[in-house]
Length: 144
Image (cartoon, rainbow, N blue to C red; front, side, top):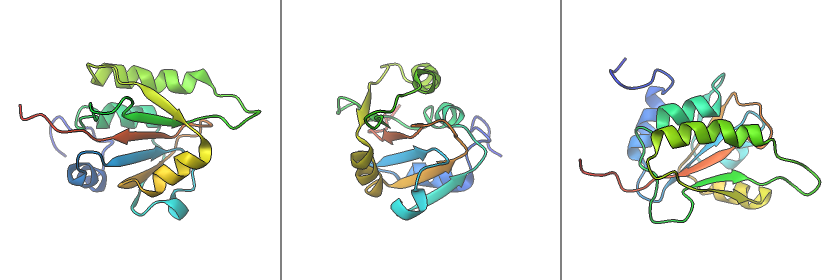
């Protein structure tokens, strides 16, 4: 164990976060996401909810300040509805960890899958909320 590092972060996940460069993306995927068939590098965080992982990851990861929305969630397919509680839970952790209160864009389902194929890593979680996936784009880590 390390001081000031959440025990929710496995050594493998910490290694991936460390190796990501500016502009690289990581997908925190819900339990329904086809991560194994989409992702080049897939990590497991079974049993963990995405809002808890956001609270553990965001103090360590600078989000990209050079894009309009360094966070992306899947948009509902036509005829379906989003549960606003999901984004609300995520927003609490995002706003707690990020001074700038970064925007979250909504991405069409298949465009989200395409973007996930290009991501640095996909983290499969125990999140069961429908449309619970979120992409984080890494920014430049400040020197101080």
